Amino acid sequence: MKRGALLLFIALTGCGGPMETASFSSLLDYQPAVLSVSPSDGAADYESNQVAVAFSQPVDSKSVTAKSFLVVTVPEGEIDRTALWNDVKKERVRGVKGNYEIDSDKKNVRFIAKENFEPGVRCGVLLTPDILSEAQVPLNQTPGSGPTPFFSTFYAKGGTVAGGVGAPQEGAEGVGGTGANTARPSHLYLSEIFYDAVGVDTEGDLFIELYGEAGGDLSDYQIIMVNGADGKVTSSVKIPKGMQVGEDGLFVVADAVTNQPGITKVIGADYVATLDPANGPDCIQLVDPSGQLVDVIGYGTPLVLRAANNLLCYSGTPALDAPNGTSLARKILRDGDSRNNSEEWMIADAPTPGQTDFLEDEIEDSSESE
Image (cartoon, rainbow, N blue to C red; front, top):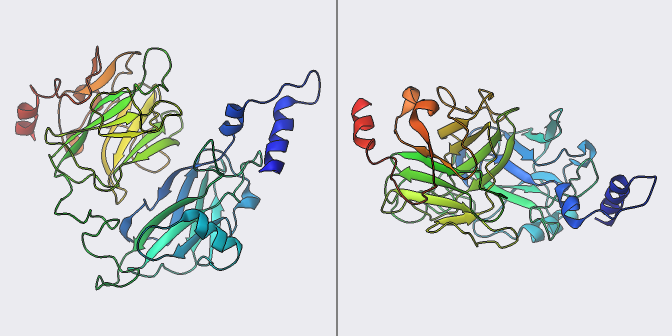
């Protein structure tokens, strides 16, 4: 970290004229972090022999090695990712053999295993701070502290569910279920988005609201933010295990106040995270635990048709880009090919998290037309 910080300090201060000290926040801007991983954390029945990762910063290709990006077999239960990283450094743990592919932007990296992952066994994806940005700053999944590694798990397709270490149990937590008698929602939509507050967008005002079947299990669904100009994933939020759609059919994901995790200004928020939906033209995708697109909205133009994750960036034609202080609210629910963002969404003069004001008059009519 000292070497990377020194090189970055020199690059930011320059060689001529008075030397200005780089701020801590500017250093954080150069720290690479994992934005998304495929398969998603906890995914079951994964059929590919590849693991794809999107980074927030271009990475140094030479730093992507079998000790910095690896897939390992792990037991059930909580995993200490830092302890696992230490075991890798001491060569107590080694990943499966494979090769790496790095896109030209150096933000998207794929690991291709030489053999298929063992069916039914829990696999862990570990990316360590030995991965460096092009500015030689280590990967860090906890900005402001660390550096700390990234870790997620998945299960390859096949195998039995008879029990034992590494064998997924049907309905078990982390394997597509929650351990309770809850099922995935029969329907789930993006219903309101507030992405451009008056003033700054980092003080806990923003939110994304979902509408779906009351009591439906939302474990491991992801909300993915996409740059509408080039389709690159800019950030994502994964809903933790055990969370469900409320009895009113709503679930509100709210932005946390900067440097105050868990604190938001959004009244009635169901989950608080670092949420950063960008001002348009951009896209927001709702993706289920298997990586399938559930819903999408694109707002503003021009937009790419498909994002870098190969999922659609909008449906039909894009919705309008909401001015600051207003939100985009859904007024019509449709399924399948009939969806059209420009017809289904409207600009709401005032955000209304946790309310269905704009949907109530339209739900019955839209369901009859399906």
